[in-house]
Image (cartoon, rainbow, N blue to C red; front, side):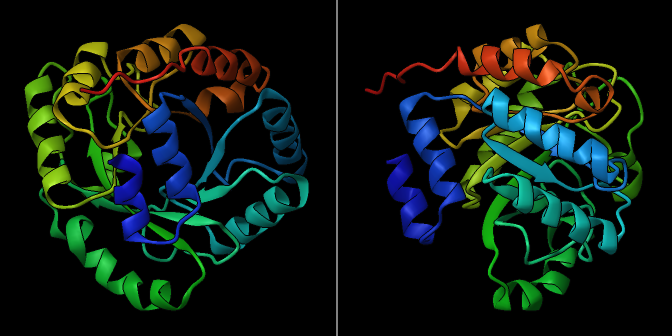
Length: 263
C-alpha cells in the first residue's frame, strides 16, 4: 500500500527509496549539511566518511543560506559521491537543480500562512520547470528545550515536548491532507531530542514514513528514535563537531532494520 501510494504520485526515485524502506522495515540514516558551515575540505571529508559509513541520503540546507554556497555544496557532493542529495530549504530562494530532490515543506505545526502555502506559491513556477523530484512533506517543529533558528525565522511556536497527543493529531491531519512524508524536527541547536513517547504515538497513528531530526547527539539517542518508530534519522550539528561519529550512528540506526508486520 505504501509503495503504491508513492508510485501513484510520481515516477520518483528518492521517494520510492523511502517508501520501500518503510515497507520493508529498513531504517535510513541521513547526514544534514549546512552549506554555510562547511568549507570545501571539511565537506569532502564528511562526504567520504558518509560513503564509508553507508549513509543513505544527504539533506542540504539551512535557515540562512547563500545561493553560491548551496551550488558549491551540491557540486561537491555530486563529484565525490553517488549518495542522493535532497534540498531541505529554509526559504524559496534556496532552490537548485543540482540536487536530486526537494523536501517541499509545509509547516503544519505552525499557524504562519507563509510557511503553510505562501512560500510554496512563490517557488512553484521554478519547481514546475526544474528537474527536482518534489516530495510533499509535513514539517512539524517540536520544542527541543531552546529557541531555534527555525522558530525565529518562521515566527511560529513549536509543539510542546510534553504534549505528544498534539503531535499525533497534527500528523494525522498531515496524512489526511495527502502529504507524502512527515518530518518531526526539534531544530538546529536543540538541547533535547524528540521523546520516544511522542515518536511512538505518532508512529501508531499514521502510516506515512516519519523523519526525525534535531537534538540527536549520541548513537544511543539515534537508536532510541529508530526503536520508537522513526523511519529516517537525521543528524547534522553533532557530525559537524565530531565527523567520526557518523560510523557509529549509521551502524546503530541500520541495526534496527526489521520487517514490519502488517495485518
